[in-house]
Length: 310
Image (tube, rainbow, N blue to C red; front, top):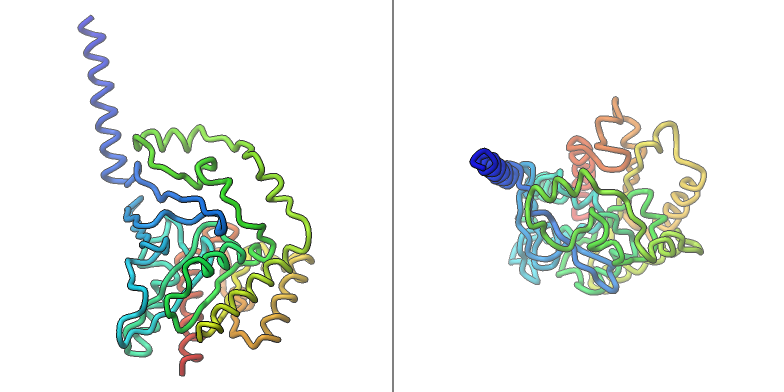
């Protein structure tokens, strides 16, 4: 009996040490959580501050990956508004100070010798219709420039839905009880069918047209608020090896025609990326950028914004 109790005690102590280590050194047990929204689909829950795997994540009162803000910029402060998906957000693997918006804020402030504040409204897998819904709900916070950053896949994004929240492991709506639980979740997680998602993902009609219409409405919101609208398009890694697929070429052409006809300042990074010595160095995976990729994008965005402001 004593041996059983001793073994039980050793197991309990070991689990406590493991749990403490996972929380203290890796930041597990506290993860970014999401909330459902009827119009936006989902967004990061407001007022989060956590550190995971050495990377800081701050979500403010408006579900932005930005520190707490006032509704209007302070005197003598240039306020810019970046809106996008996981590329803009940076997700858990990007420190708060290393997101595209944070890098651009520092670069622009140094060039203009003026205080610059860049808001970052973004979430994983948001498409133009999610982003439009966010602007409709929250507004632009008196920003001088609205910069929409999308990737090629976003041109085919489906209508906003909240079905993933709390059901998909990538969109949790509550914290785990234990950090160990989070590890076990990852190890044993299996994709499960979410009722209704097949219909969402199988959306029929002209998806590219639907998303271009949403982009046009975002531009209208910027214009109504006397703000300048700009756009950036980042490519998938496979689009440069050797080139985009035919349907992507068609979608890209439609976007370029819209940008040209509406005189929207625009950067398509496919031509910039293809000039780099090693394209693989710019990506974490097939779509998300590495720190080097984020640096390259932020530098070009900063140059575009500074040029437009001068």
